[in-house]
Image (cartoon, rainbow, N blue to C red; front, side, top):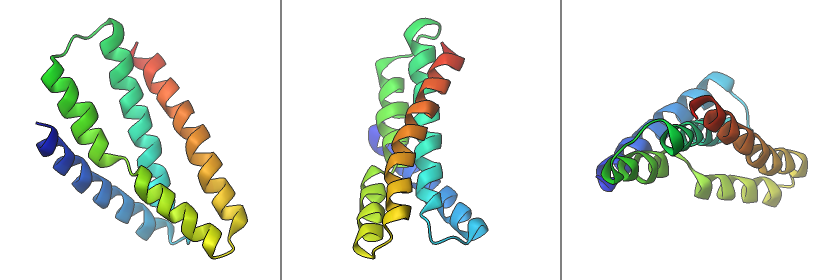
Length: 117
């Protein structure tokens, strides 16, 4: 179930990230940024809902959180893109990317948790 979920999450990540990059046309890695924020929001919503109101099996939880969202979110890509911005002297964009994804990701997780709990 984790492998199937990971494959589905990876496909969804590729499609969303590519779409956002094509639409935005920016050099900033906005596709990865959006994927990570959406992933945090959905993870928070599932964690919040299953902490109090909704009961799901451990298999379903692994499928959703470890599989789909593990494949969907792109922390290693985020790290590489942040490094590339720094390497290329784009320090302002690197700072926005690093701090922005952490802060907005935390806010997204919190919002999803609060909405679903």
